[in-house]
Length: 291
Ligand code: PAF
Image 1 (tube, rainbow, N blue to C red):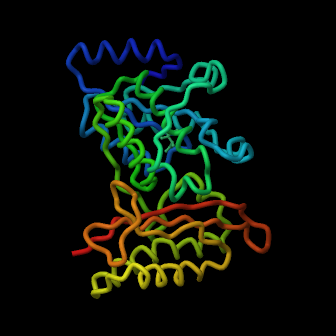
Image 2 (cartoon, rainbow, N blue to C red):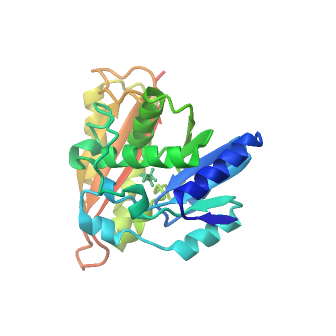
């Protein structure tokens, strides 16, 4: 496995691979790799000859400087995980190289970036699309893989890739879950024991919505109420959003659900009452089958 730090070196490597007729896949990450990331690597491997993982904690997508500073940075563990997963190249760019003059040039995908996480994290998706553009231009992949857990991010990147004509195939990797249903996330470590138990209300709400639909319920309002009630059982948390939307355009679902519908949820947890854990915001989603 090669570890590359400069953009020029990565571009030269990728150009040589492309010239030799080999397909290159990129898995962009911010490190703190877990089984969810490694499953993205597996998907990448199935679609390409060479797999590049980028590890870069992108400052422009954090709204809160404390969140950026506190983001886990475990490069040695990440490199070991990539080596074990058979990654070909790890790219570890420096902030100065990706943002030489601060960040005066932005890539901004309007509308689809605005609801859901865009409401509470202004500028977040602009930071994501700007950095992903830079990663794409450096790695020049044929295919790039992003987790479906961050559904809105995936939808925004698909829209950007199409609109800017990158000619890169975007794949969504399935969400990996703990055995009790909690979606894997680098942020789960911040949950105290009480928060960890209550976090299960998220995946339970997703299943409940599917169950109610399977039982014949189609009313947007009724389904929304059932989901909010279930999420309300997480007394350590407050609901940021729980919304039914079109999986591609992210437009709000109509009065009665029709066809596949995204249920996207974000919950903001406090630390446990005894001080264990810390504040953390968790997101999850499911594309509900509505027949
Ligand atoms: O999903 C992430 O880890 C980040 O948002 C990404 C896509 C690597 C961009 O920094």
